[in-house]
Each structure stands twice: as structure tokens, then as C-alpha cells.
Length: 252
Ligand SMILES: Nc1nc2c(c(=O)[nH]1)N[C@H]1C(S)=C(S)[C@@H](COP(=O)(O)O)O[C@H]1N2
Ligand SMILES: [Mo]
Image (cartoon, rainbow, N blue to C red; front, side, top):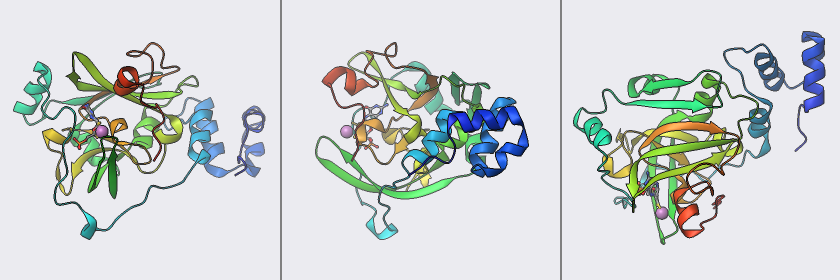
């Protein structure tokens, strides 16, 4: 698909003011303008590219397809003291941190996340260990949160820092902006109509439906926007990528 706006056109549009924007894709040009003026809904060039780069959707299922059992895998009950305190207080004081290469670092409570526009989807989770299960997930499109935070031009990757450790190392994962702004990429806080259980990543987990299970970070505490992944964890973009050489892009 041809890009509706390229960097040169966008820059020309910005320098020339509103007039030159008339011929451009509406969302892209508005976003470029917002970005240039530091507007509250700024999307960067990268994120515009992400929005249009690959819109393919993962398959969605019907309520009748939902699995009666959904295995919980990896960490299922983190023992981190701060996390335990959040469990004990029903996550009332928990806040998601969004920081790094953003114009407006955010701290969002569960209540605030629940008040943002929601997406609900019934999808199949595929683990490399050889099992799959279908569930309904509800959450906030990650792209919305990113747009609120306003990405800086250098932001290329989204890192999810988790509350749990496996074998001594903190679990983390990362995705690029293409998947970050994909409509089915959500920060899920409900599963099958219930608040997310601890075993499945309470209070908040990533659903990135076009990739394998290990990319779906549970217990997300902090989302960090970075220019590169080399200085995060072992430098390969995720816990299993570092440990077992799993692919960073785990497309299904
Ligand atoms: N924080 C964290 N996220 C994680 C894991 C983990 O151990 N810790 N395991 C991953 C793997 S390998 C899979 S298959 C899924 C399992 O999600 P589930 O427990 O809801 O089935 O979470 C992924 N995300
Ligand atoms: Mo997995």
C-alpha cells in the first residue's frame, strides 16, 4: 500500500501551514501538525507509518469458541513485595507508568484505564510450548495510551516492564510501533468478562494478537518508549529472547 504522506510532503505541509495539508490524508496530516506544534494528541511520523504499515487482523472468534480451560503459564503468582501489596489492596493504589521517549509521562490507575475507550476481542493464544486457548479480552487500545503520552520522534520500540521474576530476572517484552498501534493490541484488564486473575497477569497485561504467547507480557507495571533495545535487559528485546534466543518478532 502506498503511504498517504511521506516525510517530505509532511514537512512541506508543516512549513507551508494548513493550505498544503489539504491534499494529504486527514489523520496523518492532522497528526503531523499536532506533533509539530506539540499538540496534546501528537503522533509522530513513526506512529503514522505504523498506523498504515500493516493492518492485517488476527482472527477473532465467537463466544461459543471460548475455551473452558485456559492454562496459566510462566509466572502465575509473582512474589515481588510491591506486587503482593497491590494484590492485597485489590490494586487500588496500582498505577501504570508510561515514560521514556514521550512528551507527557503518564501514571494511570485501573479506574482511569477503564474509563478510556475499550476494545473487546475473542482471540486464540498460541504458546510455543504447544498449547492454544481462546478467550475474550477487554482493554484499552495501546495506541490510545501512546497518543496520550505523545511519542518523541526517536521512539521506536515499546518496552513492557513486568512485576515478576523468573529464575532471578525480571520478565520484560517489547514490540515495535507497527504492533503498538495495531487495533488489536490492547492493555487488557478483563478476561472472559471478569477482572484479570493474578494467574493471567493482573491487573494489566498486553495482548498483541498477531504474535506468540511469550510476547503477551503479564503484570505490566511500566511501559517505556525507547529508541533501541540494546540497553534493555540482555539486549534482545525480551526475557525469552535473551534466555533462549526466541525470535523477537514472533509472528503467527
Ligand atoms: N510477566 C510475564 N508475562 C508472561 C509470562 C511470564 O512468565 N511473565 N509468560 C509468557 C508466556 S510464555 C505465555 S504462553 C503467556 C501465558 O499467559 P497465561 O498465563 O495467561 O496463559 O504469558 C506470557 N507473558
Ligand atoms: Mo508461552
